[in-house]
Length: 157
Image 1 (spheres, rainbow, N blue to C red):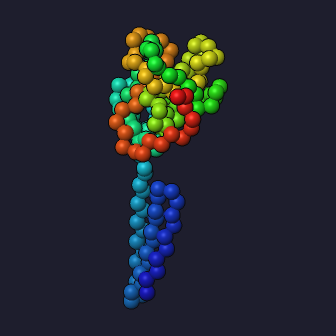
Image 2: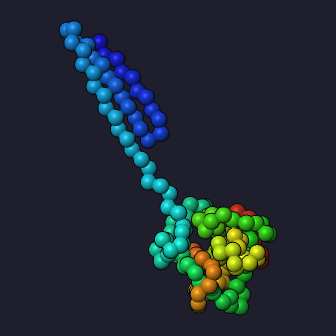
Image 3: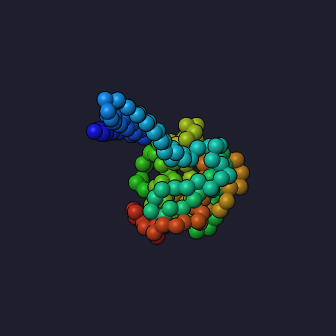
């Protein structure tokens, strides 16, 4: 006679099998532990200079530049998803851009001395040239995309 019981909790499975044959009881316990790799997080300087994968509808990779500034050229546009919205991290800012087909780069500042107009604001941009000096910003440029890239919120025309 064989009985089998399985207990599950996240990332761990334990299976106990008990078999009785001719008055001899054999118990076998097997534990298998698997863990999922943590989702990458956009941080400076750790992810600077390497393609960072976002998880929005655009499914783009981003080139992250840390401690930089870029001089906007003619035709460059800046906007926030919601005017005055504060965003907790560069990772969250990239996720916002990755939900909008008009966004080609994000500018994020987590340095309090930058002032209230930039600190923790996630500026979505289009037409922003590559960095041209040092500054407070983390600027991430949208690269290759494999998703549908739908516009998830209104952007300036």
